[in-house]
Length: 355
Image (cartoon, rainbow, N blue to C red; front, side):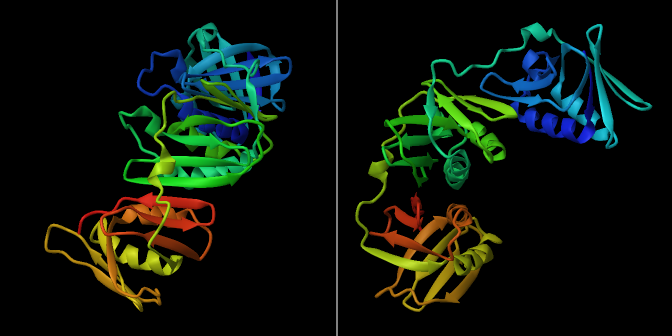
């Protein structure tokens, strides 16, 4: 194999494929990126078996066809060190040579025949959804998804597909976020997409993409790339039971004013008590030592009598970072019960802390 390709193009692709590599075992074939030059197309792939990404390039100069592998991290470090000019990749005697003018690097290859194959779309259902909107919607609830929860399905987002909309759900058991995405579908079904895959989807779902799925795999294909992720098998909690059906009181709040108050407290404490008065909102730190932070903002809440909630600052700040409107709603019932913050299609239920 012998290929000439622009440095910036190669760096972008190898950067994007690095998160898909096996990180713990450098002896595994999946710690390597797979490179193949055939029929005028350069293919570059990476996978850790759970997720995978493949690029197809038609603008590389293929001098000799063939295949190669190289440690993805080392290859990226080498490419970053090169100048913004054409790069030669050449496989000779089980080594991949990376050359640019007077610079030359050599990396050992593994047997490219051992590289895992990617799943194909044969026999899979097509997911009729706007891929750009799906990517944006997943981002809205990303921070609510748990990490390393022993109940493995909580480490992903539930896509609960209805006839006229999709509920996209994430929870870490202390909060639960639901984003309603309007969509017309032929059937009702559900998928659980791992959080790791969602992080990568944010970088990919910005163009025309076709999505396919079965009970185990989700595949996304565009003109230039192919992405897959294994799905999480398991029973997701009944999220609809967590959302309060009725709320005693709902107040409208200003997004920027609330962020201003909470950030003042966050300097001292990650927990806070918020007291809503008829004409003001008081923010107070909740800490075990003798440090203290307080701030008050003037705001007409329209509450008839004061009430307080205790909350982890990050939960509210994550919600506010995910909305575009200047106002949002906070609904509550009794002290100690979950309260709800919402803005248009996004809703987050938060368990309070004792203060």
